[in-house]
Image 1: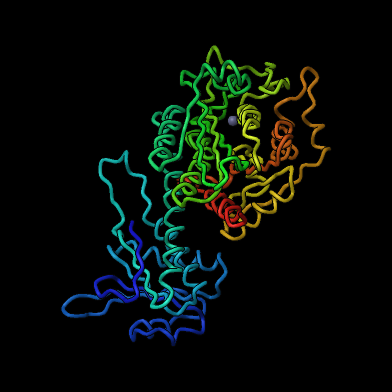
Image 2: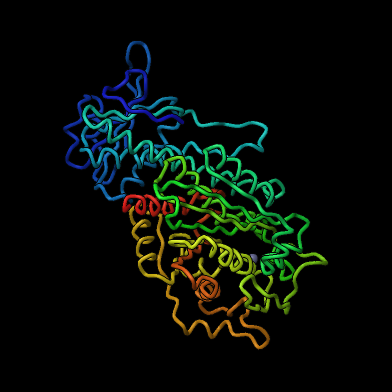
Amino acid sequence: MQFTVSAQLPAQAAQLFVCTKGTENKISHETAALLAAALGENESFAAAQVPFEGKLAQFAVLRFADLDTATLQKAAREAAAWAQKHAAVAVDVNIFCHIDAPRTATALIAAFGEAAYRFDRFKSQSEPAKLTHAVFVHAQHGEAVQHAIDAADALLFGTNFCKDLANCPPNVCTPTYLAETAADAAQKLGASATILGGDFIRDNMPSFWGVAKGSVQEPKLLELSHQGASDPEQAPIVLVGKGLTFDSGGISLKPGEGMDEMKYDMCGAASVIGAFLTAVKAKLPINLKVVVATCENMPDGGASKPGDIVKTMNGTTVENLNTDAEGRLVLCDALTYVERFRPKAVIDAATLTGACIIALGHVASGLTANNQDLADALLAAARETNDKAWQLPLFDEYKEQLKSNFADLQNIGGRPAGTITAATFLAHFAQNYAWAHLDIAGTAWKSGKEKGASGRPVALLVQYLRNQAAQQ
Ligand SMILES: [Zn+2]
């Protein structure tokens, strides 16, 4: 989809006029002004067709009750349902100032992109959205709107990349496919990428290998690099993603119902890759690295068993009490691996625990951190984007639940506070840097009729990176 800016309203496109409560009378177009005046108290959108030069001209109005991000996003989705039925849409944001016009454009681009998103590459017949071009119209603040468009377009690219990767079936999206597809996309944008394979992982990352060795698919460790800061030596921000392209549970096999959705156990990887590609496309002046640990968790004769004890990359021994708690066994070695970058901060994203869905539902991602400044920065980004996150504590008492009779740690802590004990496990391997963990098990994808990847938390991560870039 193409997004552009114009100082004048093009005559050919379907026309959308945007206002707020109380500014309806400022709409310059007569038909649209009438539509806006007729909106009910709680309505925000109306559309009409008017005969014009032998054709039907399309008009719509979008009225925001207030300018909160959540209000903008919700109303924008209504407009997007209409917009996707037209090939070209012109959006008049003239009523807004140099701050609110770009914010409005940002919300509308995300909504248009979401409405037009399809994952139909495996269908014989596709039904693409009609919408291919949106023009934002502002007589004065075209430049500010253009900046917002560039940022929103880069975010849409990264979000859709995340969704495509996540929605891809697990027989196609293997660890090799995931790593190569991401490396390819990064290199096309001018970033660098390396992929380490099974030999390296077996010899250096024994806990990761313990999860991967039950599958015929070779595990991969993907590393992406963006050197955007003026000082190449500046400590990088590192994003780590859990990339289980299929999680059967291993020998601790999951029940069959809904097991197809375990292709989404790589959404952490997909989201950090999406955030990375957005940052590169937007040329953010930061040094950024992504490390993705990707493999399958499968049961076979060589798979890890409950009771196995493995030595992790940093020497800690772990008793594996449930092979379905594999994400932390993969991530712990990835967290040790990233020490070599001497990072400014490390943030991992992982569909880690079903317990997070019990705690926070499908509304907020779970956030834990060993550094409150980092947690606060992520919570601020979550508020700014309405990509919600909620902090859970990492009190020392939770460590008790991970004590094993036979090893330094065990990989599960029982039912109480399952999200926190998983994070407590990870924290053990993240002691040498500022670290935060996003548990996205409840937010990364939707089930049921709307089944599909949500693209979260790409927006949150990108906003955090933008804020970091702005502070330099
Ligand atoms: Zn699992």
